[in-house]
Structure formats: structure tokens, C-alpha cells
Length: 239
Image (tube, rainbow, N blue to C red; front, side, top):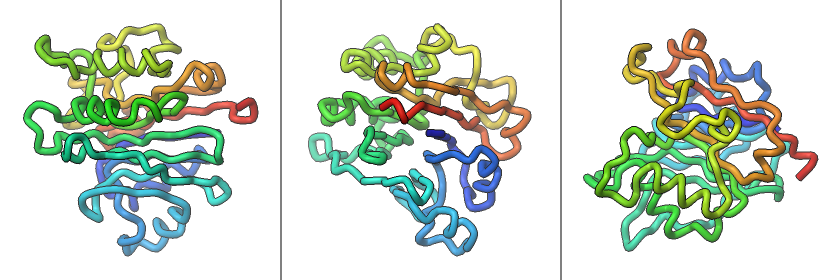
């Protein structure tokens, strides 16, 4: 199974065709339009099997699958002490594994923005996340850890590891969080400002089935988005 995650930086209706060559089974796209409310016919036709969430019709989080793949939205809570975290989109794929698509936000929270949103989501759904793939734009890296917070990037990585889920990039490369050699974001599309903030986390069982893990190069994708797509392939016949 081929999976792509990409923050497309908006206007996905004009960009989705750039991904067709890879023939991915599942696309996890941040900052994309809601196909139902789009007036772009080709985009609607392509997006015939999808799940989507967002605050506006023009910019949300989508999971798009080939027609033959079964996507079942899971009823996991986004409510943490009467506060709604965003954006998280959990689903079951072909009754084989759970997938949590992510696009974290500041969400008007001065303290729990971005990685704090994922930390809160983890506290209320940790029992469901065991064995799941967690994929998307975390808007976070260990370089931004703050000493007086218990919901830093490193804290989230530690909590996920405690339930058997780790970053596939870091497992395959042996690199440490905060010391990544391949960026996934070029801030303001400037080559001189590279960061690694997009991830795929998974359990050891799925990591062992990895056939491909590749981050798109800037020379090919920077004209379309500040984020680089991640291409991931797993051998699902052995699940």
C-alpha cells in the first residue's frame, strides 16, 4: 500500500494531479478544500472516496483513498475537558489497521497550540492509538521544546513510544529528534530556513513492513508548497 502525506499549502484542486504519477492508495492532505463544496469537477471526480474535516470549505484536512479501499471514520473524541482540539481525523483502512491523520493548529491556545493539541488528543485517545499509523503535519520539532512544559515534542514522542509507536523516519535513519538531516518544510519557501515538522509514526509491526520512505526534494515541490510530500509504502499483504 502506497501512502502520501502532504501539506499542499492550499488550492489542492490545482495540484492533486501532480501526485497521480505515484499511484498512491491513500493521500493524507493538509490545507485542502472540501471536495463536496468545490466547484472543480476534476477534483471532485478524483476525490470520490474521502473523509474531510476543517473550519472552512477552502482549507481542511482530508484522507483520500482509491475507490476499492474501504475508509471507515472512527468515533474518537476531540473533546478535552470541554475544549475541542484540531485537526484530527481517525479512520480504519480496509479493516486492517487504524490511521490517524493530523494537521495540528494553534487553535487560539497560547500554551497548548500545535504539539499541545496532539498531547491533549493523546491523553484522551491513548488506548485507541496502539497499533495505529499517525500521519501528517505536526507543526512541531524537538528544537522548540520548552523546559517548563510537559507537553513538548519530546514528551509526545516519549508517550507514543510507551505505547509502541515511533517515528518511521527516525527508526529508519537512526537520527535523533531535533537533528534531522532532511527537511519537510522550508519556512516561507526559503531554502535557508529548513525544518522537519511532518511525520509518520507507527508500531514496530508496520515499520518492519516498510518498503519505501522518501521525502520529496525541494527542487521539485517548493514551487507548489512550503512543505515537502512524504512517500511511504508498506507491505500490507503481510498484515
